[in-house]
Length: 264
View 1 (spheres, rainbow, N blue to C red):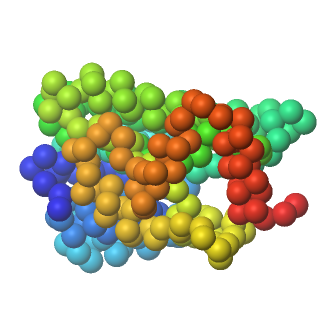
View 2: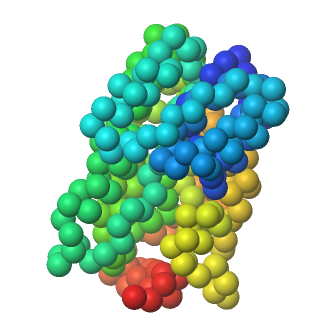
């Protein structure tokens, strides 16, 4: 499934401790690709690292908040000198769901800093190295939320829309150099973070994907950028991209989102 010569011998996974990120780590380890795993929580991070090492690969870990001012320097301290053939940025979870007006502007800025500023910093650093080596892959994990604005998720939806359009441009820029760039768009996915947030996964008709399924699908389609919509959500993404009847679509999506999210 994974071409080690193209995407190895090392991969960096930001947000690689649990959920989809851990599934990326497991599948890359099975392919014989060494790992640099970055996440905030040391416990889950080391557990995933140990499980990957048991598959016979070398793993370096970094317990780090990507919002720290020296985050890139810390990452370089553990990755400089490694031949990194793949970057997966899976760290862009929604860290603050609230109405924008009346909410905490600093918390909203944190969503932007994680999903835009940190993502750009890592992509710029590793993308430069891949361009020089003329091979590699960059996967930015996006969200179906980025196809339409939603109440209490306005900033998160906006940064995910930014990520998708940024990926499309980067895909054009790096394809002459043999570097594959893909945004993996996820819908509702069963992860520990979503369970902790109290999202309802039992709503009738809700399309819920499993973490390992979307990780596998993403890795299978690394070369099929610039955007790959996972988990059977392509029709929804196409519908949300339509310009006509925009207000009606937003109202419908807002009602669906309200039912999914836990009540205050």
